[in-house]
Image (cartoon, rainbow, N blue to C red; front, side):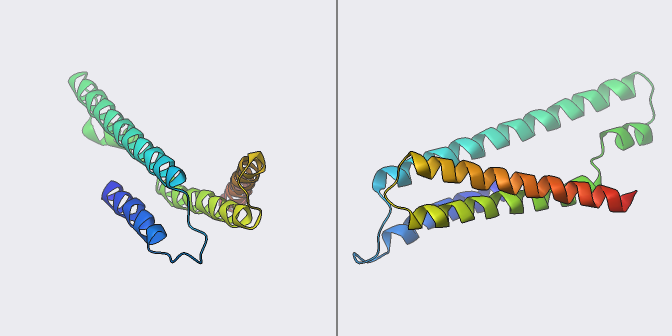
Amino acid sequence: MKTIFLTITAIASTLVANAQNDSVLALDKDIQVMTGIIILIALISFTILTLIKRWMDYRLKNKSIDNGLSENVINSILQDSTNRNKNLNIKWFAILAGVGTALTIINYTLPLGIHSLAIMIFCVSASFLGYFFFLKHTDKQND
């Protein structure tokens, strides 16, 4: 479901970029192709990693059952915590907010160059730093 949504979003974003009139600065075709390829590679990689994780969890669960462990114990070992899932959403929000901030700053500092890469790196690292402080704050509240 997530991959379908992300694929549709990626395709729609290129169509929106092409729908702009000539007075608005449009993205270069090479940048659009490169962005699409990067998104496609990321989606394929995440899908493969998720499939491998589920397959390995399935094998581990079957081996544990064959060795005589109860199914309740195995499920408690393999179950993801709900806090981790909640924090995963916050992490993606922080990453995407950092990328959005970087792209906005890059738009105002055209032409594209090595400084654009530096802006992207600093904004994404700042978003990870913010996520780290969020985790530290929530761990302090849980204790």
